[in-house]
Length: 365
Image (cartoon, rainbow, N blue to C red; front, side, top):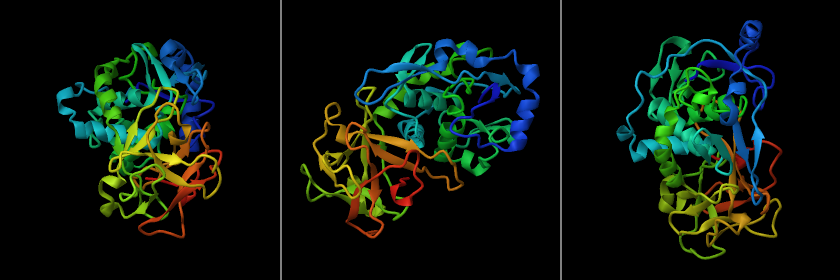
């Protein structure tokens, strides 16, 4: 996966590694101070953060340098694009989306600006060919899974998690990428990150864009265990959206994640009705209505939904995410009624917390 060890100072959203690991990194800090990878990243170390409906601006990633640790062996051979089928690419794209890699921001790279999620998917392709079973090396420091993460650097992540595509993606987002908001942890990223980087991710950009553009997901509520579904009998503006048993929902429980302009969150278009998930305007409150409406990717913020990924990775090998309506719409979260865990049970809006909410009825998998 990477040639350099973790950062010191601020560690992503919080430092989730053990005190022993942090102490080991700190003891070697003075002898490695000369190696400051992010300082050499230049443009590659910047990402473009954009809020919905505003002109995007560039923001620098963490100024804390990455200190050299141990060399992790790079893949012997880059995965063959012909071996990355549509289904395999979809595995990468789904894991990246549900983990929280955003669609509404651009990452500035050595070959141009790309959606952050596209860069993440291309790196997954370059690292492993999107293969959850890929292993490079041996022992706890072996690089494992889609994003080739080493358990010795991230001891909170279990081996079984790393061998699961979604859990590996969750760890890649919450523990690795957010440790400085940079892709410079991966050796297949931009050569501007430092010595040993090969830029292999660039070969997979087109395939990654296609996978993200064709992204289709199911969303199962953690509290009720039922799926988000559109009412098949009312495929009209204002038609109901409800809970339904996942195995019976069919196309009406499938949602296409459709890209909007880069500064906007995507819309969710139902595969059965062709209409989009909509937080009804004027009801930005607990128990506000969730409905279907004709899709409008550019002018209706009530249809734009961002993912707040879980920053606490569990051993359940399942995504845990909140879906948040655009702040230019209602700014509320998608929730299932806890008292109606049955077919045609209510789906409604609920007030979002400041960060990821652990309320299981706001939690989707």
